[in-house]
Structures are given as C-alpha cells and as structure tokens.
Image (tube, rainbow, N blue to C red):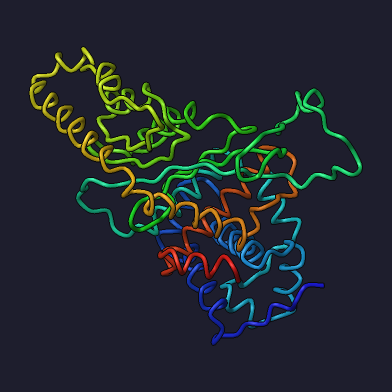
Length: 352
C-alpha cells in the first residue's frame, strides 16, 4: 500500500523535491518547452511535474494524480493549478515524438548549467548501464528467436548478468556531474563500438570541443577509438588501457586528416593535434589516478536505479522506455543541480 503524499517542509526529501521541480517552473524552462513545439506550455509543465513526482517516490502516475486531486497543499507545492488526468499524462507521452521529447529533456538539462560562458577545456565521463524490463519469466520462456521482431532483446552485462532490455549510455560533465547527453540502445552492444556514435552525438549538439577530455573505462578500449577521437574531434580520449597496451602502436594510427591542409591556418591546427597527443600520452601514463573520478558516474547510475526506479521498467516498447529514461535523467540532473553532487551525497540519496 502506498503512503499518502503529505508535504513536509522540514523533511529533507521534500526539500530536495521542491528544488527538483523548479527545473520546470522557470521562465527559461517554459521558453524551451515552447521551442520544442509541445503546447499548451502550462499543461506541459504540469505533466512533467506529475512525472517527476511519480519517479521521485517510485509511484504510479494514477496514484500521484489522485493525491494531487485530494490535497490542495500538494498542488501548491507542485505549482499545479489544474491537475491533469492520468489519461492526459499518458496521452502527452504517446503523442509527443521521440525527437520532441528528447529535445525537451536535453533543453531542460541545459537550463541547469546556468548562463553560457566562454568555453574552457572540459572533462566528460562516459559509461553505460543496463536498463532491464520487468518481464514475467515464470509465465513465459523468452528465447532469442522470439524477440527478433521486438524492440528489446536478450543482453548481458558484467554487473547484471543476462537480462532482457536496453543499454543506456550517459555522458556527465566533471566536476559538476550534470548529465549532458544520453543514448538508448537495443540489447547490450559493445561499448567500444558505441564510442564513435557517442562522440558524434556530442559533436552534433556542440557539447564537445577541441582539447576536451573524455574519460572512459576499459570497455571502450580499442586502438582505433584513440585514433578516431584525436583525428576526427581533436579531443583527449582517456580510455583506460588494457594489459599489453602499446603506446607506439596507438601513435602509428594517428595521422593528420588531409583536409586540414586546405585551411589557411593548417599550421595552427597541426599544433593542436600535437598538443592533444602529448596530453593524451601524459594522462595515459597516470590513468590510475583518474579511477576515482570515473567511478562517480557509477554513483550517478546508482542514484537513477535505486532512488528513481530505473532498476526495472514496466514498459515494452523503445519509444515508451526512452521517454521514461529521459524523465529519469532529467530527475537525476535536477537532483545533482540541487546540490547532491558529491560521492557520499549521491550514495546517501540512492539509499533513501
């Protein structure tokens, strides 16, 4: 039986939720909703707040809607004048396209970064985690051949073992730990094969700039990934090396793209490449020092799974799963922006 949602201004959890919901109430947030074409804006904000409350307390949408209709103090707390029906919430989720919804979530995540400022060299942490579907294995046996036409499939991860579902790849900025991008993949494709796709998405959204650093674990290890990141993006790919790693073999794959010689400032670009390679070699020489930094993304995943219901999803289409994952990432970003941005704090909130 679910507990009633009684607002307690002195409770730490309610204080955190209050700061989290603020991500949808600001003037800039409403402007981003309008840009994504989701109207009316007031209704969009109310629906998003219902979804955030449902995930925050791990409750069904119908229960949250019922509680909002019964409790005036909860409506004031959530900044909801007119409570949307459960059907309206589900209709909002079904009618918005994947592109619209992901664009909205990414835009709201950007509002957490504050006013844009002159870019400096930044560091990003990249990792993936399993998104498991809540299927009844006692009622039916699922063979690989049975899932050929499904959005989901059998997969394997070192932490979860065999499961049916998807893989979520998350990119967070260090040291703020704010999520900046996420991708959802069917099954559990190799991290090394996904590396190029993740960098392309970061470049498309103008997040990744020359001489930025991306930190990844050994799952992304491949000589071609080092070379591709330097050659195509001029970034420092600090992928933790495996046993037998040969820096000379890596360097033999790194060549200037011929297209740079068509630029009038090709000498300046050559200097950037040399600086990136030099910095990469220095960081690879002391990669073990970056282990505590990379481990922070695991605490972010723990927060998403343990505190905000990403452990098992009662969804069965990619479109539905993607939207729930997007709301979860937004909730994680808003929680981190509210001040939960250290390892101990992340672990404490995850264990609530």
